[in-house]
Length: 485
Image 1 (tube, rainbow, N blue to C red):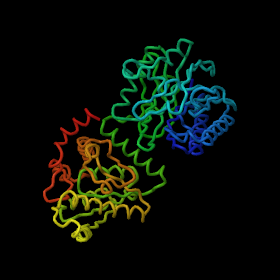
Image 2: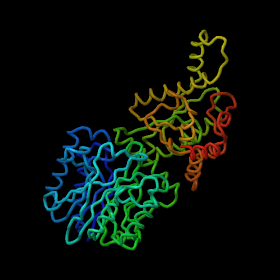
Image 3: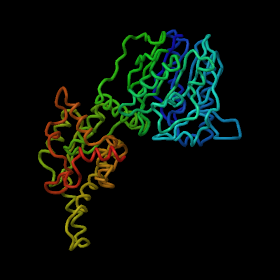
Image 4: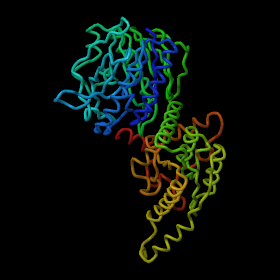
């Protein structure tokens, strides 16, 4: 069977936009001679739809879109993830569903059996689990239509969350020529290798090919990498989907792709950079922004954030703001300017020393008799927050915050100060990974100034301040957080 895997980027809640992407993919599938076009899990609603599912109109809109798509199908089939109603009086009111659309109608609907309720998933809150699943006959083949987690009941990967049923095994016992798994599987470092190993093991165990179509794109804090796969009955994996971008993949037969060897993202740092860039690009565009701004201190965190933003949006859509005080070193000011010049982004310097002195003066009579301490440090950070938010409001640009996971996990940041903003780009990167990724960025030429990478990290809110005055060395802290969090 000739297939087209539509590795698409859905927007949560944008049913008309998602429907159009499906329609475009289906039209292309017809042009390429595909027999079946396969789209990801919840492609009509976007994933995760969360409490939008509590709105009856939203559910009906997605069902109406499914019916429109079905009416437009011809001899080429279309597999689409959507949300179905549970017509029974018992259980949750909805199903996470997949439909096979063919020759002007909805030929078959199947529901997700395994509903994840761990980590970032909370599907049992909304959906009823399928009680059974039957193969679907299409063009002479018995297809097993499954959804994401249905393929994950494997003892190697689910030691802490065993399920009582195995949907893939049940399908194969009923006679199944091929398993189709539509997915919205978010990415983390190492996830793609785990996924390939899992599907390879499952295909080999069941002696059945598995066709896996995964969503791509950023939706809030989740990033979907695509990486769609074709696995033959011997467990041989063909990485047919390029990671971190939308793609239509023609599959003439299991293990063979029409476009030859697809490009595959190799190193962890490259994958991480592409994931963060995609996450920023989609968050900004899906929220209706075009431009971003951020404070550039001359430190490593703001430098890395700026590089990611420039890659995601283009340098012309990024504005850096230096806000030095009397505690800011000349080296840091120079590094901020040099970084902006290397990236070609807009840059302006707005010193905060004068407003800082003014605020301290206003508080003289209240603070009389008290020594300066972290209070005055936080005043500086909050003045910077005021300036950045003012510019965000005036220019309609999204403010990016620059704190990393190590700082945020222990509260080494200022509420209403450096925590101001709409998206915390590095908030899941430990400090050690920030340095590792920054060195990777500089692998060909120096983009982040060398002095930014070599100097001890400092908030520069008091004389000769260093992060390690208040925190353990970052290699120690990161190890603690990895074990604890």
